[in-house]
Image (cartoon, rainbow, N blue to C red; front, side, top):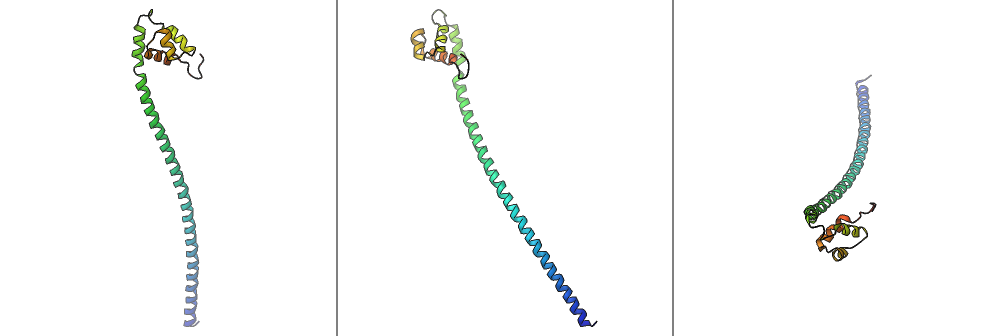
Length: 140
């Protein structure tokens, strides 16, 4: 074989290698693009889920804060009740009929009814009413 034929064969071989390498590179590029597209879709799904969970967390935190405020207010309202009950228990039982007032509350008497029929102050009548009003779902 002549030197020119060998050079032409080597050049053809190199050209074939270049074409094959180009095809492989193009395939790798397409594969890389496909993987990037799939990753972008997974990222979008993840980001949407994070936003949803963030909104839920904000709602839970807001609810917890509101519940804490209501609990604080409830503690403020309930804190003086033991002292009031103690004061009521220490009073002369013949002057006020707390048993009768409790019975009337159980029958649906209002605070005004208690003040008139039992001679209680408005605060005492409200206390008896709160202590003895049947709760929803409880037997009377």
